[in-house]
Length: 227
Length: 203
Image (cartoon, rainbow over all chains, first blue to last red; front, side, top):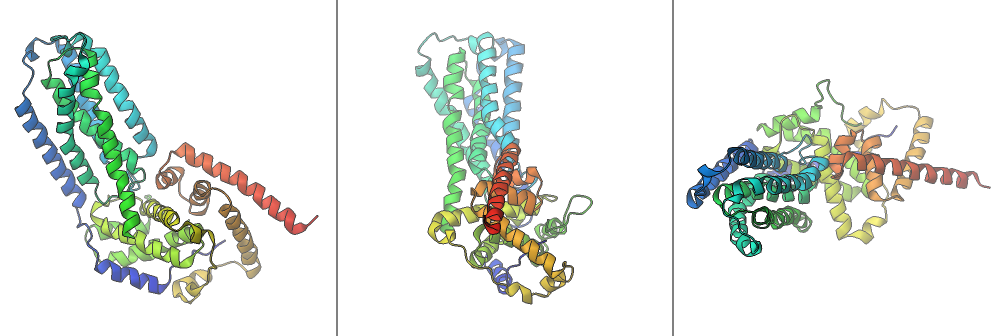
């Protein structure tokens, strides 16, 4: 049997003195952030819907395909947001297994959703044979512009939380933001073809995931310097 | 395990943290008193250097203090504290690698602490303690020779009594990886301890 070691009483005094000069997040900061972040994200997405508008051929589209695509994207956006922003049972973020599954599984599901549903549904009204890369970049830019503030909101909510896997959580923040933006673009963009949807709507998820991962991993360097 | 868990799964440390997070400033000292020994012991075994372990313990609790408004009621404080402590330790190793490799002696000004003395009254006999201390020292020495990830997995599961899920959260890896690392540490320890015994007994 081994005795637990104890820091010296002087170390305890030093700690208590140090807390007096350190600003702590006030009680209920998390709730406030979730509410503020949620309100900000909702307001941003609604304003983008009103600015970009809904595709002109919306009412002519096959109902099953629309419902499947929109519901699938909405579910993916909600699930990825919840996984990215969860504090976890031990306050260090979502478990690694779930983060890994989300970071690989959700983009794969979105790919299957887009590749499986779009050729028969929402995107087929204005088919663009070939030249998909050229027609994809405006949508890619829009996805990125819509998602960037959402990435910022995600990072704001997580600020100050000590995460076990900051890189993976950051990637999930980027993925969640990109999925919300993808949903918005799916409602706005009338260009057909799975190729366009993959290149223009899905591909921007990757740089956004990298951005989120970089932003949260960067905190480690900040920790190292601040000590 | 150093911090006892209540029947509902919450330890006194978790309760103190919940009170502190709710705005009761006085609970901070209680959080430190209940959590610091476990975190300090963990850091001391990792670093083998008392001043560094004290500094990192203070830093760990300063981060917990700052994050009070982010605390989720019912969350386990100890795995959270271990995660911060381990990360701070690894950062300190990266920034001053040559120094940490040379371990320092662990001197005992803790023996003047009344709480320490009270705990000591429940201790077994001196012979048992000596045997345990020798074994613990041999295990510590052996753990210092294996990779940090394996040693930490072993310490968190066997030394600190965390569950596999909690240890996985602390180490930022999957439950399977923690089990594998702990198993490898166990195999390595067995080999090292057997080797040490053969050496002591002589040819």
